[in-house]
Every structure is written in structure tokens, then in C-alpha cells.
Image (cartoon, rainbow over the protein chains, first blue to last red):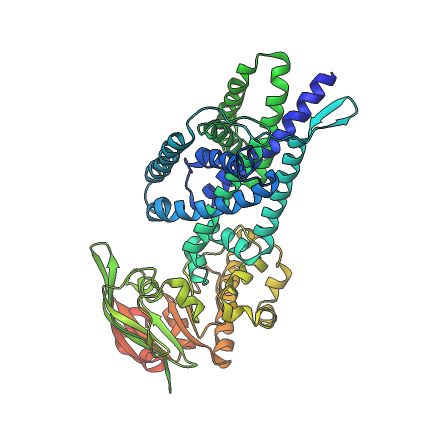
Length: 286
Length: 237
């Protein structure tokens, strides 16, 4: 029983971080109807950002300070990707945006493999552990969950309380009307893409503080993000957080009574069931 | 009299299909100008072309003496040229208040936000009651009020309204035309695009009648209303 509670707690902590990654994907989809296939490599870049800035042979920053730097790099990457690969295909059919973001995916992975190889890396960092009753929680995971939760809170404050955040919601809701109200749609779309890619890199950075990784690791988390996003409802950040927690819980609990290799099977089974039973997701409308 | 906006020889359309031929019009300061005609003669296309949502093939738009033809729609809006689009085009997932806030997005309108909000709430008390409600859940008439109010929140120098009366119950149409009279009295320059020719001619100072993508008749509204051709074709008299 204790073991089960511990695994569940561990999984839920991870779930917050997955939720953060999925939020990046869902925001971009919600605002501009683009499925960002460069999401995984961006997560991986977040991991390498932490490695380069805070790893053993890195720049010597504290990992959480490095995370702030990684967030801004993520924002900048998002702007660049938007203007290179997304802006001109916004009005084109979905296949175009899939191809163009997939190209970005290939470029990042290609360059990343050349520069970093695919051997596993890790950021040697530990915060010890916290004992709550009979449950032991890893410090790095606890902090990661808290950071993910705070970022989610900040994201909501941004979207619901600040003019640029409201502009993002307005553009997501009706782009032409937003233009007519004096909202610069292009800048707002670029900002949304920047935020989406920032969330991806942040989640990658957090994962790097407790898991080893290589340049291809983002792919796994990208798949998880897809499951989470569909679970929670496309375009819905709260749904992404909820989906993340569900996925985290599954990852925590399933290995206690099945081989770990069954985890993706269960996850994708859930994905298929949701697609059939409630295609709009748990928190999606309709 | 000063001309606030001038549209000169606009030709435009979609793809290969030309919709407008050499359309010119002038908006005088503080006047309510109407653009009337049947469905599908290019009235909405003209407004879209003026705003830059559709690129003109020929001609230009002069606003406050400057050629603004090539500017992006949001730039035009932030300079005070505001369109209340056909079909309302509200931010349906956002509250009434947030829609009004988005109307006041540009710098020029942000400064007087509270003052303008008071004014708009005074004009449409219903919106004050519904401030926190999502606009997607409002009735058609209330949505049209939000659309006009949102446009007014931009502090327009020229307010263009596309099909104010479309799909609304007659008593609501009367209310909204009353609002137009009030705005005109306050000195707002407006361009009203309407299928409801009779109402539009009754409320406006000057009118353009559009048919087949061209301006067919223009003149002071009372003269246009007295025109035999107009009476026969649009007023059914």
C-alpha cells in the first residue's frame, strides 16, 4: 500500500511537468490551429540548455537560474520558428503546417545529433529527498512540480489579466475581428508560438534535473503531450494540466503491478478510448 | 465641411472575380453616410477593401488627408478607422467586458477607457448587466449591441457599420437606429451599410446606392429617397 502511494505521488509530481509540456502544444494549437511537430526537439533543447548552463562541464549556473535563461531562449526560438516556418502557411491546409514544423523537428534533431551525439547525458544535480509519512519524495521532482504549477498559474494570470494575454485569447477566438479592433494579429501569433515553445523548453529543463536524456528524448515527451492534449481537450490549458496528472498517475501506478514496458500501451489505449468516447477531451466543449 | 475619409476609384474582388468597379465615396465630418443596395452587390467587399482585409486592385483610401490604402487592418483601426463587421464577429469565448476591452486595445482608446465604458454602458444598459457573461451566450440583439459598443470603445474617427439590422427583430432595429441618431448628434462620422434601404435613407445625411459593384446614384438622402428609380427598385413604392 505504502509503495502504491509513493509511486502515485511520484507519478503525480511528474504529471505536473508533463502537463506543462502539453500546455505548450495546446496553446499553439488553440491559437493558430497548428500542430507543432517541433515540440519534442524543443523539449530536448530545454534539456540541453540546462546541461550546457548548469551541467558538470557547463557554464556553472545553478540549474534553476539556468531554467530562467532557458525560458527566454525558448521564447526567442519560438519567434524564430514562427516567422521561418509557420507564418506563411497559416492559411494553408493542415498538411503544410505538419510538414513545415516536422522539417524544423528534423533540423533540430540533425544539428543536435551532430553537435551532442546521441549518447545519454545527465545533469548531476540533487536536492536530496523529503520524507512525508512513509512516502519519500525526490527533492528535484518536488521542486519541478512546484515550478510547473507556478508557471501554470503565471500563464493563467498572463492570459486572463494582461492586455497581451487577452489579445492572444481574442486572436485565438476570431483573428479577423482582432485585426479590426487594432490588435496586431501577426505579433500576437508569434508571441503565442514563443510561449508554446517556452513551455516546451521549460518542461525539458525540469525533466533534465532528474532524468538522463539525449537529443532524441524529446520525442517520448512529445508523444505524451499528444496523449495529454487529447485527454484534456485540444486548446485547453487546464485540460492539459489535468491530462498531465492523469498520465503521471498512470506512470506511477502501472509499474507497481505490471512491467514498465506496459506503460505506453496503457497510455495509448487511453488515448484511443478517449478519441472514440469523447473526442473533444475531458474538459473540451461539446 | 471637411472630408474625413475619401475612397477613390476602388476596384477589387476575390481571385479572378471582380466585385467592385471604380467605386468612389466621401465621408464628411460629423455626417452619417449610408451605402445601400441589395444583397450581393459588393457593399461588404467595399468595407473589407477599405479596411485592407481585401486588397484593392485599383484606387486608394485617403483618411485624414493621408493615403492609408496599404496599411494593415490593425494599423487602420488604431488610427481611428473602425469597422463593426457583418455577422458581429464577437470574441464569443470572452465576456462582454473583455470584448469591450479588446475594442479599446489601441493606445488612443486605452487612455479614455473608463470614460468610454461609462458612455457605452449608458447607451446600452443591458451590457452593463451582462458584463461578465460570455458573448457567445447572448441573444442576437445583445450581440449586435456588443459589436457596436466594442466599435465605439475604439474611439473611432470614422465608424463603419456593416448590416446593423440584419437578422434582428424590428423593435431592436428601431432601438439601434435610435442609437445611430444619438451618435450622429454627438458628431461621430459614420458610414452605414444597409440592405434596409428605407431605414438607412431615413437616418442618414447622404447616401450612395450601389448596384452591380458600381455606385449608381448618390446624393443627399432625402433626394435619393425621392428618386423614382430608387423608389421603384428599393422602396417598393
